Image 1 (cartoon, helix red, strand yellow):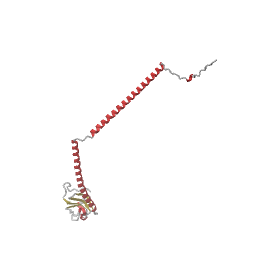
Image 2 (cartoon, one colour):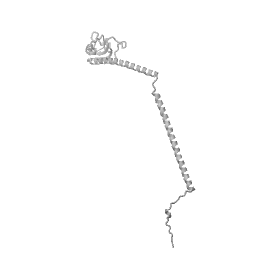
Image 3 (cartoon, rainbow, N blue to C red):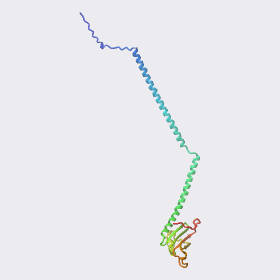
Image 4 (cartoon, rainbow, N blue to C red):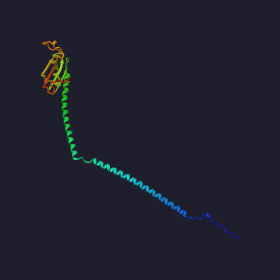
Length: 215
């Protein structure tokens, strides 16, 4: 008697997969879904790029507008404007020259005036004081008071020792009793005690009319 043994293992056999209509339908749906998703992504990218391009165009237009404005601002000035600027500069130079000249005159005058003021201060003596004065280039007037007429002569001599008044000759002198003094108490033959005096040198300017300034 014989016996047959099947040595074939079903697990080792190659399996064959058969796609049916259902599987093919599912695959087609998946492909369509992927295609739609890809198309949607591309549409989104296109819109984003279009918006970015629009923004760049707006920036470029704004930059061009600013460039045009700056170009217009730095355009060469007109001939009329240049002429006005030149005329204004010429006037400025002329005024500066006049101002410099006036400053020189004022400086010289102030220097001489201050020197005479210092001389008046250094030339003072006890018993004599000034009530007013006029100091100019060609005219000097001094008004003051003294305790006696003799002190006025001493004052003139002392003042002549100061450099700004050296060689000056007073062409006129007036002396009178102090304001408010009682004339009845003054002896006509006796020399004045306290006196008010005025000294002149040179020709009085018409503008001053011989009126000294208060010190």
